[in-house]
Image (cartoon, rainbow, N blue to C red; front, side, top):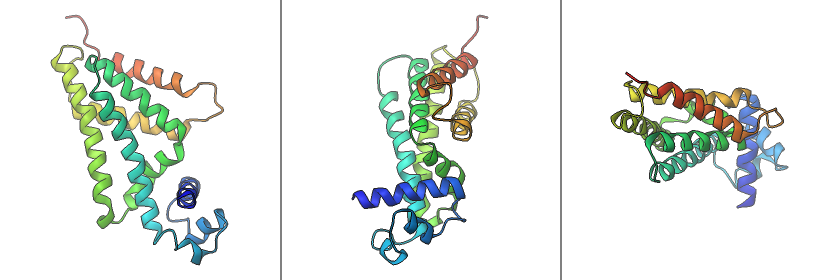
Length: 190
């Protein structure tokens, strides 16, 4: 099991730095100190590595979102916690978000259904919280689906600029995302 995780991590790093199409099974085998033939003992195809990475990544975001959405608090409080959890997860493994956002559309159709389904569920979960906040009078009227896509797009773009040795810690980045986005949604006095 540890070897499989090592292979998956190497694939994530290589897909992140080189891109999915530019990475070969030889590259992945070399990164983990295996011969290409030995690599196939652990994984049947490069597409399966991509699908597994995308699925594991979105599954983590979805699990966080479902847990937080089911907790107590107002819609804005729960949405703020989801935003912060998203940023913390992204900052812990930005290469996996790169694979999910930039490379997962290369997952073959026959392997992609689960990834697409979980992605839709996560998008809907965020949109539903925004709609709940609108209904409760916390947020100004807006299209919840569009607002969710805007939020998730902004969050996911952090994989392009986040630096682990940067001046802001992940928790502070998450707090700023939540503050900025929630302030934009907040219903103003009439």
